[in-house]
Image 1 (cartoon, one colour):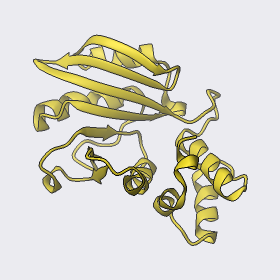
Image 2: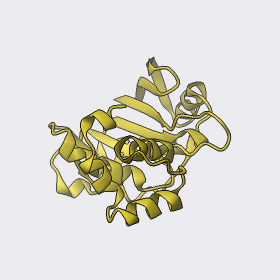
Image 3: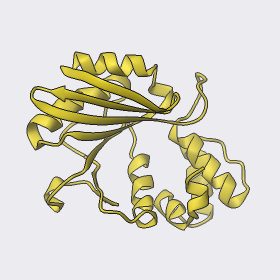
Image 4: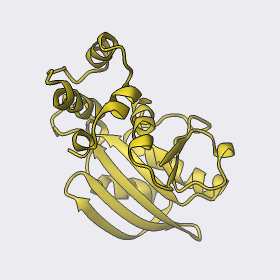
Length: 188
């Protein structure tokens, strides 16, 4: 797996990664690229589309289809911004995406969507990050905290500040944490 933040760096992109308002997903993906060597190229855009959360994240899809001719997307959404998969489908329809087929691959966690925008066929995988469906859930931070617990047996509160403090004490960043973690911890 190769993660790039510029289309100029590659000849072909397999998936565009669309996220909410943070860059931790990029750091995790950068850490995973050495762990899972395969031929996929993932484009994690920094610009030109501003960061979006929740329903507005789907507004970016028609832009990438029209501008870059890319038709496969991985939408990473923290559970704190996610309402339901039905709401996701409604938001896609509002972005002029015609839904042809859906399949919930993992209940309440991963939805596969096959559709069309204009004449272009689309594949969209929506992945919900985090474990709790409560109001104060922390999305990806919950999963990072769990990884820290599995690897170091330390309970860290799932917030940016506490995670960064822990990693700084260990003299590592998030990408290094993922790179140094065994696959058994990453697949949990």
